[in-house]
Length: 182
Image (cartoon, rainbow, N blue to C red; front, side, top):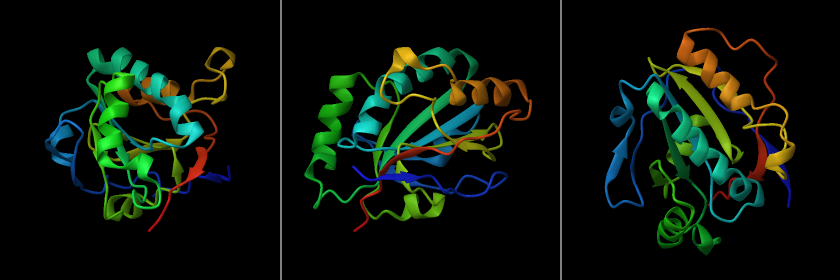
């Protein structure tokens, strides 16, 4: 597995718009998340070991931060022809199996991933209530072993953004499998 580091749009950028189909049968757009105290956009997939290892933690983040008005959305941009495990049908099965409590969307054209300059799975973008990027970094410091995590970067960033404070630590980029471009 070749690991790739996130590049992402610059902090301070507005969230690029999207309108994508979800595993729930409806279309989701950026405007569906207006009014959220913070929006976490995660580019992910079904087959990458790093992405798979992060799924339960993303479910926990959405659960724990929902009362504060935080929303999380996952987007799968991978080429589903070359990687059939990333097809919409497989995404539906994965979301049901893992109990995703957030929308899981399919970016077939890969235009959304390109607009965000997403590079890896997972690639995490945290936007404030005005949908301005405040954080593009890793979930935490140990993707292989959740019980060995000592630094929860996404949660720390969410705490700051929800409270209206700046991110006050050195950001470590996400690292994961490369996005499988067509």
